Image (cartoon, rainbow, N blue to C red):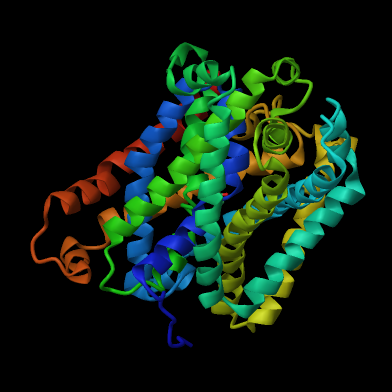
Length: 469
Ligand code: PHE
C-alpha cells in the first residue's frame, strides 16, 4: 500500500522540518537543566563530542535509509533489510511513545507560561515566590489539563498527515525563534553573571562531572537530534534524490546545537546574575527542571527593552518548537499502526494518542500531585538501578529510560544496518557517487566502528561500573 509520496518543496524544506523536529524542549528545557545538574563544562564537551562522532553520522544514516526506501520506520528497514530489521522500527515507535508521554507534560508548561506572561505583560511583572513553580507542578488537574490540551493540538495536526503544513509553519517559526533567542543572549551579556556562566559552560573540569554525565550526554545528543527512533528516517523518506544528505544533516545538527548552547548561556547568565535566583537554584529550592520557565521571564521583564511583548511571543514559539517535535514523534508512533495493521490514519492517531495520554497522566501526576508516583525510584533495586540510576518519579524515570537507553540502542541498530548490513556499492549507487571519497569513508567508518564501539562501550561501562548508578 505504498502511496505516491510527497516530497519537500525544496532542500530547505527538509532542513526546516528536520530542524523543527530536532529543536524543541530538548534544547530549551532539557539541555540547560541537565548541563547545570552535571556541573557544566565537561558535560558540554562530552555532549559536543557525541554530537559530532555519533549524532552526525547516525543522522546521515537515518536520512539515507528513509530516502532510499522511500518509506518510514519499520517498512523502510524491512524493504532494505528484510523482516528481522523491521524490529528496529518497532523499537523506535515504542521509544517515541515513551518520550511523547512525558514530553506532552513539559510542552503543556509552555502553554501555561504563555498564559502567565500575558498576565504579567498586562498587569505588571512580579517575581514569583520560590515555591510558585513547585505549587504549579503539584497541581494535578492543571498538569493533566495542560497535557490534554497539548495532546489534542498535536493529534489534530498528525491526523492530517505530515504534509506541506509542517514545512510552511516551521519555515516561519524557526527564524523568529532564532532571532528572539539571539536577542535574549545579547541582553544577558550585559548582566553581571555572564563571566561565571561562560566559565561554567565552556571550561571543562572532568572531576566535577558525575560519572552518569557520560551516559546523559550521549543520551541527550540522541534526544536533541531526534535520533534513534526513526524520526529522521521518516523525514528522509520525503527527500529528493538530488538533495545532499551530508549538507542537510550538517545544517540540522548545527542549528540544533546552536539553539542548545544559546539557551544554556541565556539561562545560566540569568541565574548567576540574580542573587535570589542563584541562592534558590544552588540550594535546590527551585528545581532545575523548571529552569526554562522560571528564569527567562525574569530576563524579559526586568532587563529587556520590549520584553513585555516578547515574553508571551517567546513562550508561544516554545510551544511551537515543542509541537514541531511532537509532530514527528506522533507520526513515528501512529505510522507503525498504519503500516503494520493497515489502520486508517484516524484510527491510528486516536488509539495511539489515547494510549500515550494514559502514560502522560502518570507522568503529569508524578511532579508532586501523587506522592506514590512522585517518589518511585529504583535506586536500591538490583539491575533496575543500573538502568534508572538515582532518578525518582515517573516522569524522570521515563525520560532516563528513553533518552539514555532506548535511543542509543536504536541508534546502534542503525549504525549496524547501514555500516555492516548494507553493501558499500549499494550505498554509493544510491548516493549517486562513482567512487568513494574522503567524506564517504569517514562516514562509513564512523558507522562501522567508531559509533558502535562508543555506544557499546558506554553501555558496558554503565552495566558494570558501580560509579554510574
Ligand atoms: N529532538 C526533540 C527535542 O529536542 C525531541 C525528539 C526526540 C523529537 C526524538 C523526535 C524524536 O525536543
